[in-house]
Length: 207
Image (tube, rainbow, N blue to C red):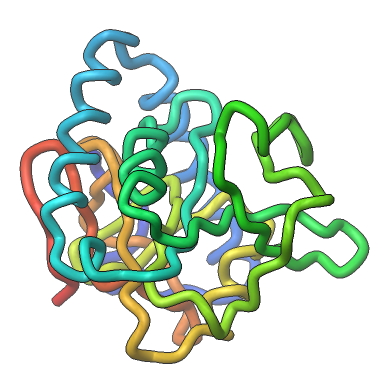
């Protein structure tokens, strides 16, 4: 487990909260970037297999997924598995004018995606839109998580604004390397949590 830098409660505000989040984000990303590529691949496969075994994923009809960026775990096998069972797969696309995520349906990863916002692989803008109300399962990305399901993102707030629009019953599941699980995520009262985090070694159900 990676050591956290926040106080035991993790609850901060204002500049102190921003600084704590930034410091933890930089530390975890540096750790993730330094991992051996082969070990990362093996760990990614284990995360994907653990999520494939989650009952809510297997029964979902419209899933919101993400694709890996830089040293993130490889989510593509999970996307392929959803497509193989004919689930509707939505991927997010950043709308910089509204600072929101648009959801587009993909059916072929070789054809339907390309580098977009800040080099992140996104669905093509021409693809059909998916309404957030139609999504019944979400794979939530993040830099770090704690065992309460609290999440540290990349600081843009895009997923925070998206997740608040989801009905409460929609499962929100994250994947992460074991080193991305920390004791406490610096957080504010309004920050949203995920329901579970799959790592290569365990499934953490948020307490």
